[in-house]
Amino acid sequence: MKSLMIMTVMLALLTVPATAQNRNISGVVTDESGMPFPFVNVYLESDRSVGTLTDEKGSYRITVPDKSTLVFAFVGYRDKKVKVGSSDILNVVMEPVVRIVDEVIAVAYAERNKSMAAGAMERRSQPAVYHDMWYSRPENREDYARINESGFRNVVTSPLSTFSIDVDNASYSNVRRFINNGQLPPADAVRIEEMINYFSYNYPQPSGAHPFSVYSEVASCPWNRNNLLLHIGLKGRNIDKSELSPSNIVFLIDVSGSMDSPNKLPLLKSAFRMLVGELRPVDRVAIVVYAGAAGVVLESTPGNRKEVINSALERLHAGGSTAGGAGLKLAYQVAGRHFIDGGNNRIILATDGDFNVGASSNSEMERMIERERERGIFMTVLGFGMGNYQDSKMEIIADKGNGNYAYIDNIQEARKVLVKEFGGTLFTIAKDVKFQIEFNPANVASYRLIGYENRLLNDEDFNDDRKDAGEMGSGHTVTALYEIVPAGSGPVNPGVDPLRYQRQVAAAASARDELATIKMRYKDPAGSESRLFEEVVRRGEKSFERSSEDFRFAASVAGFGMMLRDSEFRGDLSYRGIVEMASAARGEDEEGYRAEFIRLVSSASALTAHKH
Image (cartoon, rainbow, N blue to C red; front, side, top):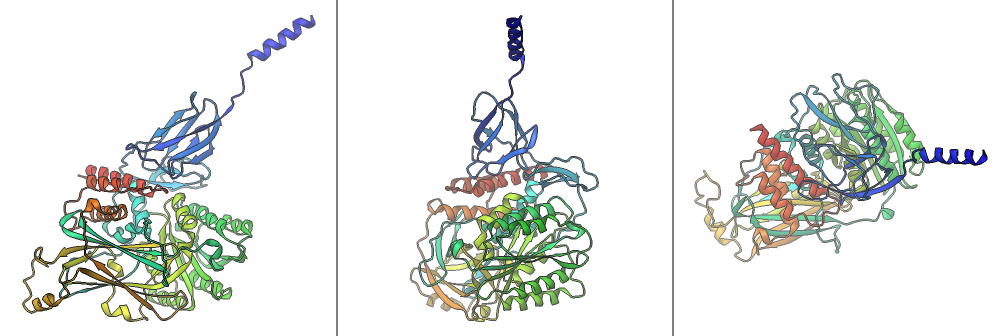
């Protein structure tokens, strides 16, 4: 009897299905061209809290139950569902999808909101991982400053080109948001210099007395082979995080009703938590919010009290009107009370820009920002959202506040701006940085600065230390491109008669191998007098194909900007040609940003084909 019972128990055990074992699955995600695909969401279909992201090389690793199903998702691409089989290696190829958005648009979000926009058609949620959601298009009230594209200038009559540097990169991520949502961006949203400067380039590290190095290269212009392209690069000195001066930071956060959207306040909180993770004990943070009124929700707190800072962020909710002017004034008061001599005193404004200034006018607000700038309190602006996005207002605030401006369209961009580029975003190594290029009429007939239309300065502003200009952060790179018509190659300005009295001036110019002279002025972060240095650009142009990878990639980004703007100077450019140009110049691409750019150009090409 006892033997029978034992046998019965053993048979019962044998019939119980085994508990699913966990498996370590890894692999590489690529796009349809075979390039690694970074920042793809990888999660368990049955439990979306189990998820990860692919790294810069497209690699991922995740632990999931045996025989489960993984989902691979990225905005603008079809979700891929793959069942875990017998192999622990699972490689996936993502396929793009062109989304037509006459009635719906895509947005990213991290967690299920208690209320969504009216007309929501679908919602999906997953903690810490962003997915798509379709909902009815709101009224579009986005605002962009008009850009009048610069044309060619005659070197004999206009030998000097003067402009302020621009390290902002908001335009690129905003353009990416449009394209990933199935739309071509409006022309005025495309600031070509910001698209070029979104990417880092391998310029030499500074080695002299100045806080940056200057690089130049000349080759044939890819969209007009009769012309030349002059590439000028500036590289700021890298400062180790441990050597950065203490920070006195005020988070100025828009919590008005317009921020009640998944890709605004929830994304903002996630972004700021990343920044809090980078703070040191010597740093201090206060939080000021504004909606119908402005208030302090966290007094200045040491950076090592991260749980206190994050708790204050979590308690924020959106609602009310937008008293932006009152918020700015209060933020400056808080920053002033905790001012650190020799430190990094900075306000970080996070908003969709849809705010009024209260009793003050826009000009009064700008003057207040300029006064505080002179006191040494700088401004960083982070833009969020869509539909009512006020780009022009935020760009002005950042420029007036000696700061920089970025657009956060997803959590990966937040990581790039606030973690990977922490020093460049928050720590200024030089302010009021100006370029002045003098072209040699013996070798250059005319020239055109590509982009920087809203950064142009009068020639006399270069030596005027009262004139504000751009700031440069630790490790930042700045790139400028000039299209050049060589002397003697054709008409200087088509449609304009030859100048009778200028020939002798051109003939008297130096006939040596000098193409141009680069002059720069800048001030130390706490200084009031500028320093000058200059460098000669010599001839020695090469074919475009023999130029450096950085030269060719920057040219492809400029070409993409011209295509999006439908520029009259785009020559024989095509989207296919830009993809080929950028693919050949992708280089090591450790962060995966260049590969993403190539995919973006392909998506824009598909959208253009549909449009026509």
